[in-house]
Length: 270
Image (cartoon, rainbow, N blue to C red; front, side):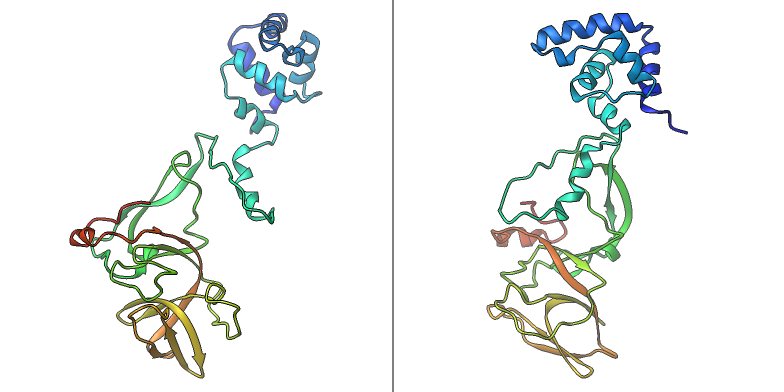
C-alpha cells in the first residue's frame, strides 16, 4: 500500500537523520538566496505537512526537494499532480489558434510501447500494416518519445514505391488508422483534404486511398496527381476496409531517389 504524501516526506527526512528544526534552518537559507520568504518552512508548518493536515505550496515543495535530494515532480505526483498528464488533455482542450506546445516528459519511469524488432519479411517499398510486421514490441523510456498506443490504433507504412495518395500521403509516410471507422462515408466534401482516406487489405497486399462503395463493390480512388489507376474490388472476396486514416507523420521533402537503392534500410527520419 502506498504511503500518504506526508508520511513519504517524513520518511525522507528521517532517512537523512534531520529534525524539523534543522529543516527550518535550511529552508531559511534557501528563502534568503531566492529572495522569497515563501520558500521558508517553519517547524510547525513542516509538522502539519507531515501529518497530512496541510498541502505544501510549490515553493515549499521546491525547498523540500532541494533538501531531501528528491525530484520536485515526485513530490507533486504524491499529491496527485502528474505533469506528464498535461499531454493527454491537449486533445480535449481545443483552442482555435495555432500554438507551440512542449513535448517534455518529466517522469523517468514513464514508458512507451514501440516495435523493437520487425519481421524479416518487412519490405520498405511496399505499403503494409506496421502492427502485423512487428515481430517484437517493447517499452522504452517516454523521455525519448511522446506516447503512442498501438493497442488503440493500428499503424501502417506507405511504401516507397506507392504514390497512390501523393502528395497527401507521400511514399515513406507513417499513418495512424482508426479501426472503428470502417464504414466508407459517402457524402460531399469541400476539398480533397476533408475526404476520408481508408486503409484496405487486399489478397496480395494493402492499399491506402479514397473509397467509394456501390453495392458489394469497393472502388479505390487515387489522388488525381498520382500515376496509380482507379481499382475496383469485391468486398466479399477481394478487399476489406481496415479503417480510416486519422493521423500521419511524413517528410515534406520526398526521399531522394538514391535512397531507394537501399530498400532494406529504413527511410531517413524528418
